[in-house]
Image (cartoon, rainbow, N blue to C red; front, side, top):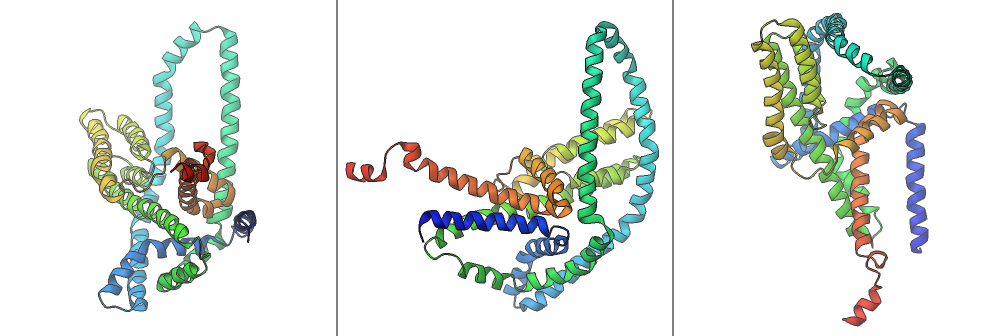
Length: 360
C-alpha cells in the first residue's frame, strides 16, 4: 500500500471514530468511566500480581476496595455537603448584596466622570456579553445533564461501570498485547514509542494530578472546617477538586472563602487564617506535590486543559469531559511528533536527504 493510501486509511479511521463517538455518546459514559477506573488501578493490579496473586484475584480485591471506599465517602459526605450547599445558597445573595453596597460608591464616582454616550455603549456591551455568556453556559450545562446526569445514564453508570472496570482490569495486559499484534509491522516501533509517550502523559496527569487534587481537597476542607468557616468543607473540597488547573482551584477557593469570611467574621485573624490556608495549599502543590507526583511528563498547558474540558462537555456531554484530557494528551504527543519530523524534513531544512548523503 502506498504512503498516500496509508494516510487516507488512517484519516478515514479517525473520522469514523469521532463519528461513532458522537453517535454513541449517550451510552458510552459507563464504559468510559470503567475504562478510566481500570487504567487508574492497573499499576496496583500489576503490583499484586508480582507478589503472587492471580490477576483475577488481584482485580477482585482492588475493585471491591475501591468501590467500597468510594461508596463510604459518598454516604459520609452527602449529608454534610447537602446542609452546606443549602447554607451556601442562603448566604450567597447576602454576600453579593454586601459586595454591591461596597463597590456602589466607586461606580457612582466613575459614572459621574464618564460621558453618557460611553456609559450607554458600555451598558449595551456588558448586556450583550452577559446574554451570550449565559446562553453558552446554559447550553453546556444542558449537554452535561443530557449526557451524564439523566436518570438512565446515572443508573447505568452505577450498575455497568463496576462490571466494565472488572473485565478491563482483569484482561488489561491481554488487550494491550492483542492491540500490539495488530500494529503495522514496519511502523510498529514508531507507534509503540508514541503510545508510550501518550501513556506517560495521561498517567502523569490522571494518576498524579488526581492524587494532588485529593490531597489539596483534604487540606482545604479540613482546614476551613477547623477554622469554623460556613460551608468550609464544600468550598475546600470544590477548590481541591478543580486544582488540576494550576492556580485556579486556590484562586477561586480564596476568593469564595475570603468573601464568606469577610461576611461572617468581624475580626481580622480568622480572615487571614482562611487566606493562609489557600496560600499554604498552593505553595505545597507548586513546590512539593506536583513536582513529586506529576513532574514534567504531562506537557499540557492549563489553557488547553480548560478548552478541552469545555469543548468536550459541549460536544459529547459528561462523556466528553471524561475523554477531554486523554484526547488532548494524544493530540499533543502527535503534534510534537509531527513537528519533530517536520524539523528533520527537507520542508524545513530546504535540503533533500539525497543531497545531504552525497555531500557526506
